[in-house]
Image (cartoon, helix red, strand yellow):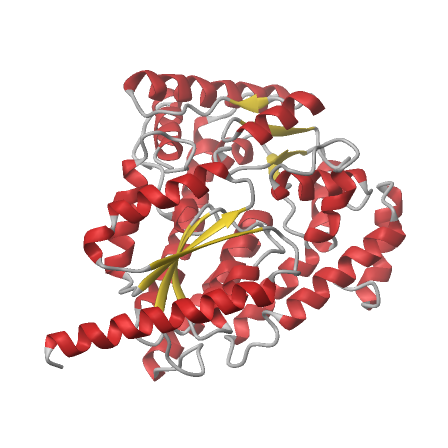
Amino acid sequence: MSASDPAALTYRRMWADLGMNLELHDQMLEAIERVHRTTHLARRNRPLAMSEFDAALHGAHGSRVAEIIEHRRRGGKSIGTFCIYVPDEIALAAGVIPMPLCGGTGWSVDYADKMFPRDICPLVRSTFGLAFSGTCPYKTLKEFALGETTCDAKKKAWDLLGFPSLEVPQKKTDIDRELWRSEVRRFAREMEKLAGRPIEKEALARSVRKVNDRRRVLQRINGYRMLAEPPISGLDALLVSQTALSMDIDAFLAAAGRLEKELESRAVKGVSAYEKPGPRILYAGSPSPLGYSKLHYVAETSGLRIVADESCTGSRYYRDLVDEGSGDLDSMYDAIADRYFAIDCACFSPNSERFDNVRRMAGEFGVSGILHGVLQYCHGYDIESRALDKAIADLSIPSLKIVTDYSEQDIEQIRVRIETFRELVEHGEKRQTAGSGV
């Protein structure tokens, strides 16, 4: 939503009531609108239903904020989160709305410099830059923000700002699993304390089914990307996954259902989201929070087709479901904990699960190359990209690692590297075809 949008006028009073810096907020909205217009909206032949997810992006600081204000006015609560390890099922069962706070814009990064060093994760700086600049509407629209221990920069940020956090183990032994199960139960107790009432088994069962439904529809939508002519681009599939984290869950399920029907129709008719075919690529690595899609944009405007996403804003978020067959609360909490424990974040060592999942996805989606997208100073994914390359060496799939931040300054440099990579992949495809006698 740009500052000139008529709807923005309706929200200005709301933003002022939240104590936001309206002048800076207008600048930020204009920057987000400009980037979205030149990336997503400039692409031809998008599914019509994508307009609902465009609206969700723009509504993240408008209509969604108004929804949460109304929820709180009726006695509900809300918390801020930074990672997909926070169990949405438990928060929702307690009547608490979990809102992702991760910033994905380079616009706000410099505003974090008064507290954080410059040479740390851009996600941390972007997120807290929004808060320090007075441009984050969720700064005061929550009971508390909940961190987690997935990287050193985040852990020290939580300490510095006094945020509570979930202890995510760094290995996957039985001892680690029990530690994580105890953390999930502790989180449930915190949600009960916040809500002022116990979590009922029926409410938890409903929220488990609903959050699983969100994962299922994302699985089906992304399943269409396996087709020879994908009816949705990687850029748009990313936006759908990004907004799944921030939209009201019922609104998302409705919008995703409409998109799924349109994709089915496009698939039957052979309608592709791409103007011409190009190498099929798997994106792997650091997550891309709402507002950030630079690597997907550059790759897909340089002749590549990103047909699979292995990240926290991709398959890592929706791949696994919570077992819905559990009976009492204790077994339900264990099922929830076990599902989240299966997430193959690069914070784990060893991380053979991630390598196995990438190998499986490479085959299922028929990819000819892998793009390692690594956020600057994201040491886990940066170092692990080398180990991942070794794990897939027998697949003879070339890869390219791009280390970048949220700025736009390096777009053309990245484009040169990606275009060279595309030529390498295409050469490999031709050689493979010739070798097969086709």
